[in-house]
Amino acid sequence: MCGRFTLTTGDVEALARELAAELDRTRATPWRPRYNIAPSDLHWVVVSAAGRRRLLPARFGLGAPGGPPRINARAETADRLPSFRRLFREGRCLVPADGFFEWVGPGRARRPLWFHRPGGGLLLLAGLCEERPEGLAFAILTTPANELVRRAHDRMPAVLTPDAAAGWLERPDPSLLAPAPEGWLAATEVSSRVNSPENDDPACLEPAAPLRQGSLF
Image 1 (cartoon, rainbow, N blue to C red):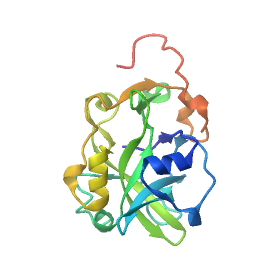
Image 2 (cartoon, helix red, strand yellow; image 1 turned 90 degrees about the vertical axis):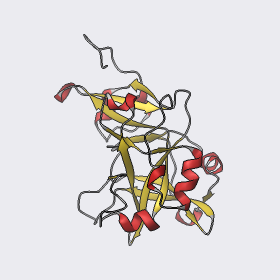
Image 3 (cartoon, rainbow, N blue to C red; image 1 turned 30 degrees about the horizontal axis):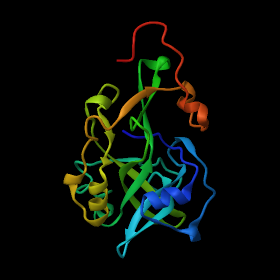
């Protein structure tokens, strides 16, 4: 599952250049670094039209307005399920991020882990998007977790290499959707502020208070 993630860059122009995408200023919205993106939030996705990439704002979660958002789709079945197969053919997108969260521990003692590139940098998540009357919306495709993420959850977002990302925009190929290669990600225990989607500031990524006993892994 992927229900919370980050994109902490403060420079949308630099992001568009890194993604080789045109920033669609006709849909421009205020840009700010995000430290705790949650379902129903406005984020950004990359779509391809006529061979050109566009960076567009989109709402996190598919489905009818007022209903629960469908934030994830399983990569193994999305091309066959009635709710996603049209988007798999026609609505593929990239979801730029620089990390995502999962939780470990029991009940009220659950503690957030931030999965990110060891040296920092962009992650490209495979997504599905659709145009609705109120604007573009998206969901993130998930795969079985790799060894690192499996310690916290059995699913993870489909993290694409640059070549796979280009392929995903070009064609509906399920073989492109795979767990992140081992070594691509590091796990950092961060502040419990992340537990509330109302918190969205740099303090969310501060190191967690030390555990009194035991260890996360």
